[in-house]
Length: 270
Image (cartoon, rainbow, N blue to C red; front, side):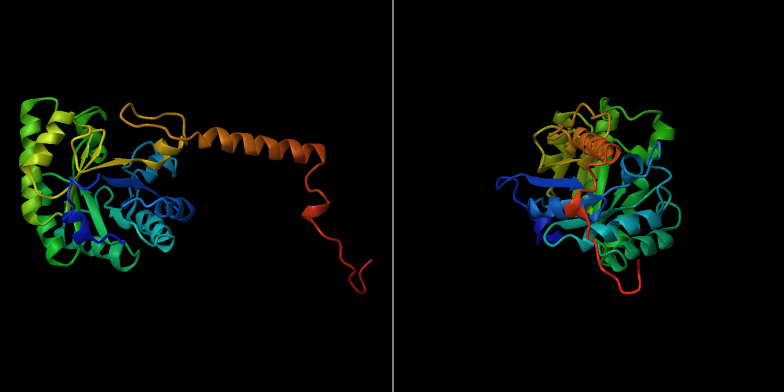
């Protein structure tokens, strides 16, 4: 099982790290069996599994529940729990308590937060309290009401400079890794070269320490895949085909067949 220390000291020249989301036990078991290094129980569960229009409605209790399902099915991968919107950034003491619950109650080995100037000191305090932290820069879905969209970030020099400085600051605060989402590949390379902790890219090009994707994009569940992702399966079509076949069998009377049930002689029962 990779530990936080293993990830922090990862040698980029060895091999790229692998990073996927998972939100339930069967998916987590499959991801773990495949040998993926890190599983993120992301607040993307809101869009992908819970029917929300964004990540903003996701609650701490929902992340705890899904994280518990993932950790119970995982033996080898490092499980990271996402900090949902408004669970950090206001009261640091509340944030530390919430992050601690992710480890103590749900079994995660680390937490992730969407990072900014306001999370540097929080990262330091979390690490001091024994809570490993993955920082997250670039596209921040929790800030959609501020940014107005989910388009690529760091396309201007001032924002690219800010990401670089925030990356260095979070490394100094004790973050063990950095997630870079939907930024230009050259910016991601520059950040990766400037810090010693590993970087995981989601839509950030090849010159990072590892690659991450949302599991529903990988499996083809849903009706849209972002342009920076790659769909490796078409589970949605398989699900629809299986359900349609079930419906046809029930309507035709071919299910259940004789091998799907038993008859029993019960005393006193006609």
